[in-house]
Image (cartoon, rainbow, N blue to C red):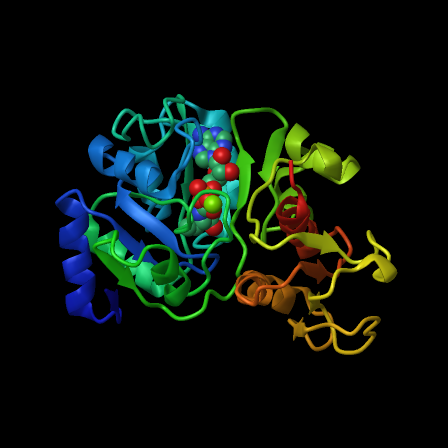
Length: 323
Ligand code: TXA
Ligand code: MG
């Protein structure tokens, strides 16, 4: 079920995809659950397996910038092509762009929208698979809808023990949180989901980039959040509940060593010195681990909402939201 990414297994995986099956594969952000993006039936199986709402579109993955024109209808749109060229240096990497959809792509992959989200992952196993398939892969994160995204092959197997034809093991994901998503359909460009390619980096090459309403509301009022990426155990941000009111079994996810204010049952220190790259890389595995310990509450620390911190806090606030 979990397979090492040796060339024979990459070939087998490509064969499965071309025959309409599903393969989970590693990327630098999180593991994806992939199907041929041009095969409507195969893509529909992803929605069914994840329990994903039919209106939530998937990301289409490819191996090179030159392939984008077969996925997005940009031939006659010089404005969009200019923006794409400015973003070129971010690929392969954790950036997803929303563009006008090409008719090659299955309608189910884009949830019936006339736009398509595209990304070129920076992971050698993902790139090898994409090349061997010779078709783009529609792939959401390989988790049940609204649970925590998987950052290891084991996480995928825990959620889908028998349902996926193959899980390619590429070790732990280096970045650990999902890609930045921007829409090039609007002017100025809109940030739909913060990620490891930061707002600051995007503004440097594109000029103005607007934070789209959902992300914006998230910054101004966390109460408006939709729940996502959540553990089953109740999760709160440290400081939002007095330690006197804590239940008996509480776990802590700390961003640096030290500063312990309660007799926690379990403590996961996910970065020794508060380095944001470490926090992102270890965040989901820590949430999953504490979620197995039968705790009454998980408490998590916070960081500044700039650079990579914007994406980290986006995920934490969504995970802690019960709306
Ligand atoms: O890092 C990642 O992006 C991972 C790896 C596997 O590549 N994938 C991932 O996929 O996080 P998923 O399905 O969990 O998130 C896709 C996001 C959703 O927020 C979805 O609404 C948005 O991309 N999206 C996809 N197509 C879109 C479109 N046409 N317009 C606007 N948003 C879109
Ligand atoms: Mg997801």
